[in-house]
Image 1 (cartoon, rainbow, N blue to C red):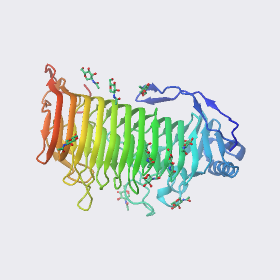
Image 2 (cartoon, rainbow, N blue to C red):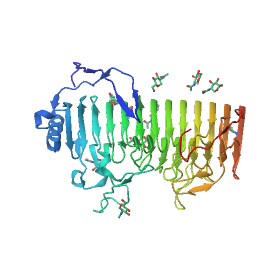
Image 3 (cartoon, rainbow, N blue to C red):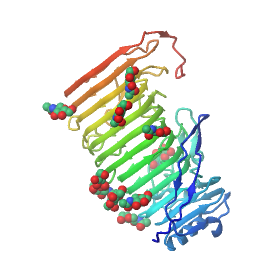
Image 4 (cartoon, rainbow, N blue to C red):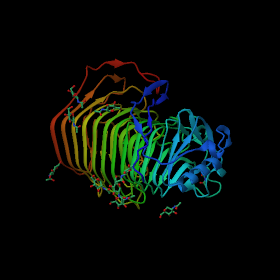
Length: 481
Ligand SMILES: *[C@@H]1O[C@H](CO)[C@@H](O)[C@H](O)[C@H]1NC(C)=O
Ligand SMILES: *[C@@H]1O[C@H](CO)[C@@H](O)[C@H](O)[C@H]1NC(C)=O
Ligand SMILES: *[C@@H]1O[C@H](CO)[C@@H](O)[C@H](O)[C@H]1NC(C)=O
Ligand SMILES: *[C@@H]1O[C@H](CO)[C@@H](O)[C@H](O)[C@H]1NC(C)=O
Ligand SMILES: *[C@@H]1O[C@H](CO)[C@@H](O)[C@H](O)[C@H]1NC(C)=O
Ligand SMILES: *[C@@H]1O[C@H](CO)[C@@H](O)[C@H](O)[C@H]1NC(C)=O
Ligand SMILES: *[C@@H]1O[C@H](CO)[C@@H](O)[C@H](O)[C@H]1NC(C)=O
Ligand SMILES: *[C@@H]1O[C@H](CO)[C@@H](O)[C@H](O)[C@H]1NC(C)=O
Ligand SMILES: *[C@@H]1O[C@H](CO)[C@@H](O)[C@H](O)[C@H]1NC(C)=O
Ligand SMILES: *[C@@H]1O[C@H](CO)[C@@H](O)[C@H](O)[C@H]1NC(C)=O
């Protein structure tokens, strides 16, 4: 393509309201790549009134842009109701501030095969992206069958047999088998199911994206990165009911994922590897991340035989709490690393060379490090890590969580760090502090070795202790002290 540069500079402010808290992302200068052609959906008949479907107009614009060799497609302010549209090679959607792409809520709005149920779908495309400062909305609340404070009951489109089970709802944005994907300066709201999904992609950049999903809705994950290599995520702000950032391996390995400078909040796991874990995960870096009020902080649910290696978690602030006893996975653990096989037919994956460095966590429960007989945890290293353990809800704390599958929920008292099936663990400058107590919720056992093989452990400057213990009146079940 010609080298005459045609940069568009967009300055923007990204706001998101999370439980009446306003938070702001930094205001970077964003440049659209050099794009030869400029299209607008308005020129192809899109109405943008939020009532009439603009599917045909949007698709016609994309097709024309793609045929012209690629370019950018503007969505001027307005609400564009649409069934699935297919993004093609060379096409960048520019959803301007004040513009919203709104997903349809009818089964016939989506293709026949459920694997293609997305509002926006790019398949086997190269050099594609989404930006512009506007919103893409999955209309997720329309999929709630019954609102419940603990967990909404959702619609499942499983009548046709194209999808089975109770998780049959459309995802929001999908890149399947794509190369050179860029998603930036955009808000993704209220997905009905997973929000931003990469499958089998190479060279993806996601930055300055904010994702908001209802806190009581299951399966509305923020970013799911599946079987993909060379993915970079930075300056993102994600608040979701289900997992915020979730790498998986279902049909191939995942190499080189870097996540930096993000803020995450989840009623499940803020960062979770798995549980789909049939192939290897290698070369992952999570740095400078704040995790707020999540049900679990850093999680690995390796259940299907894939091996995890070379992962670093650094410079993090983590806060985890209980939300309810059993409906959502997670038991307020700041760190949860497990290889328990899903069922008796599953292989055991291993986890090795994992580093936790410069981490400060405040949580209602301790760390859970649980390998399995043929799926050992090896060479785990904690360096400069402060754990503050405190109870501020009154939910029970006598369960460890081996879900999904495996041994399920098992009665066991809490500890600062529970360990089983480990070969090689180093703790250097690790501090556990118990702070305050709720009546009858006192626990201060720092280290708990479950009956199994735990070998080659070294502690250097490990400290544990309690603040002056105060009795605090037991609060109402579930209330925040
Ligand atoms: C994308 O590639 C996959 C694998 O080669 C193929 O199964 C699928 O049909 C392709 N999709 C499209 C829309 O070409
Ligand atoms: C369809 O979804 C409902 C839950 O919404 C579930 O109870 C039912 O078992 C599912 N049926 C099939 C065939 O998957
Ligand atoms: C990776 O993708 C970006 C666009 O997001 C592109 O600018 C870059 O050239 C790609 N890298 C390679 C090696 O293709
Ligand atoms: C990712 O890299 C691995 C190792 O080179 C390779 O086997 C796999 O096919 C790659 N995946 C993609 C989507 O390119
Ligand atoms: C994958 O993307 C990286 C850049 O992130 C590039 O260096 C590499 O050549 C790409 N690999 C393939 C198989 O396209
Ligand atoms: C992962 O990144 C390393 C270092 O940049 C690179 O050498 C390797 O080729 C990448 N792996 C894949 C599968 O692209
Ligand atoms: C860490 O991330 C925050 C945004 O969450 C950013 O403001 C800050 O500059 C980052 N720090 C570093 C050292 O990059
Ligand atoms: C950990 O923190 C120390 C002190 O702030 C800093 O010098 C070091 O670079 C950090 N390590 C990593 C891996 O970020
Ligand atoms: C841990 O606490 C010590 C003592 O308060 C402090 O000096 C250190 O910076 C803290 N480390 C982290 C990673 O927060
Ligand atoms: C013990 O673990 C350390 C890393 O934590 C490793 O370097 C060393 O080789 C291990 N020693 C044995 C005897 O396995």
